[in-house]
Length: 510
Image 1 (cartoon, rainbow, N blue to C red):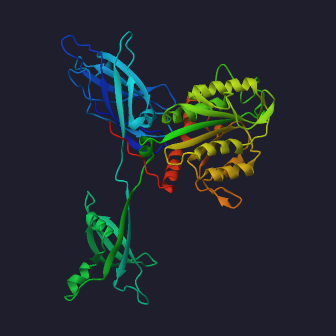
Image 2 (cartoon, rainbow, N blue to C red):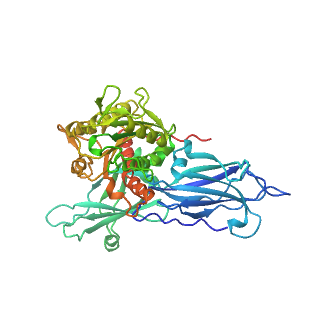
Image 3 (tube, rainbow, N blue to C red):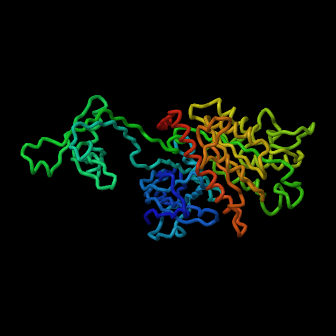
């Protein structure tokens, strides 16, 4: 069988990490007369923004079994911000041909890579389908992150009686660390005297090991700094000074996948702009216009972000709100009304449930104004504040067409929310100018309100028009939008965990 192929990432993409998928099957169809099936699994990856599937790789063939545990694994680049659709086709190998079309088809399963990673302990079981009238068994997928050593070492050192290299003053020493062999166990350290012109003077060197360095956790370690040239020239040469290791500590740097596999849930909330500036929903010029041929910008933005985040939420229930409308029965203006008209439980079942409630609200509320963000931000922040142990992280998506009316209150709400486990995505739709939104996205200047600065940058703003495909391909437009607005979520989650010293829970073994 062909070796696993290489998948080219989209231009400009930097994979968050590599993920190894282990594949097993249970209760496969038996297609052989005198023995059991000889199964193989072929993995296909869907090309982003299209319906095309490309073969990524194949497992080995295992003879005579209906419950194979394959040894050959698939290693894929993982991008949180992309919908990475996978298709697993299972065949019974009856001939020596490498063509899958010449083998017996045993079933297939479709799954997003994010679903596997977001499932409990990174383990997902799916039924195989595709053979009419037959139960095809199941496929089991286990996702494990592949990474290099992520230990961060902090050392405190001091030097004593180093050779004087400067004519008018003492040396200005600095150290250069080298790994002397491939496994990194031996460490060579050079000591230099710093010079402004870059012609640094060599003082001496010493060698040690990781194991020896780690002993400084319980005792000081003194190293002699030796200059080989001086040692050869001077018979009475002792050393060029000493370096003492005073302390040594090791911390593990955790990844986004570590927290997801440890059980952290991403809770997704939607807030949609129902102000009058969007135009009458019944008119084709409205940003809320429901066309029989294509989705509105609001629906596209919702699906683009929601369909990725839902893979990391086990209950698939999403609170959804509207703001800036007069709502029945009394026609009062509301800035956080539930789209499903259920104040006690504003959650909708899946992204499709959110879309249905959004379309229903368009028929029952009166678009009005103003454009206030603070109420819904404070609403989600209040929920986020209830669980701050790292098991829950909230993502609020705000979709709007215009300028914020309550900028001061919104800035205050964001600064307060920056200390909580939450992120805010703002998508601007329509032709309006969104300069004020850029201030909320604290990439360049940290957001502040009344002398208080945001603890973290938790806002990402993008105008939807920048991601619309010129050919009208809505799938590609959604993929582009999601890729950009979700790219910062993993780092924002990690920044919260790090500031609170929250470590991921261990994924319990089976």
